[in-house]
Image (cartoon, rainbow, N blue to C red; front, side, top):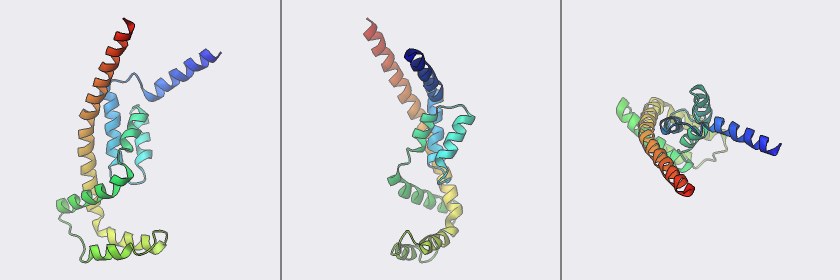
Length: 169
């Protein structure tokens, strides 16, 4: 009975994780996750990644690894640089006194509603710059992630096959 349960669980996990997927499909799943992880859809990264993984029948774990490649300490610098890039591409400029106003804003507690209202008001003029810059950044990073992940996965599988063949002898 335990053997049947283990076999069932192993088969279910293989289907869920698409373990037998080609390196190309696994890399595509990772790349899709990277796209959503660095996209302007803040707060929806995981949900969108999972949704599209199911829609395209891709490896859910690979998608989530891509989504979570945008680590918390990368969020601020990435989105700041992406917004600056977006501002340059759209011809937007930072509002006059923006840096001073931003510095003053952080003298208030993040837990106060006023903080978030003021932050929203300050960032409204930069909304299009944020979307354009982070969308372009997400596309570029996803495009870079695909060949890197494909190469890594293919080399790991070759190594695994070599080791497996070596142990059989």
